[in-house]
Length: 116
Image: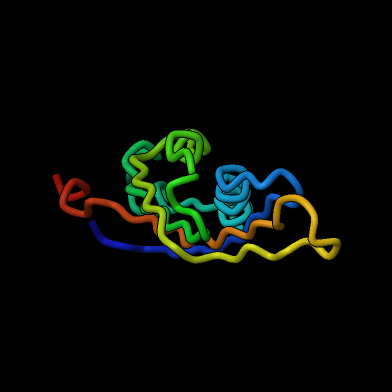
């Protein structure tokens, strides 16, 4: 895969303590920064996109990867969840922390396919 673009995002779960929600919001944040027309520029279909999603949260096992993958309407997505992000205690010290997920989204193509 030839990597062509990396975009970054951040997502939160303010009160529910939901790591998946924070991860999904981080992916959407990264995607919604740009209108990416890479497929058309290189003569590919959108379904040919290879997408690598790296998510950083304090509790990686609490992220439902299938929900993160469901954000992508096309392309071949791989979601990798790592220890990272931030759990910020609430000011009142009561309840769930505010969860922050950091996301790096890499898009590329199998460039060999374009030359067929």
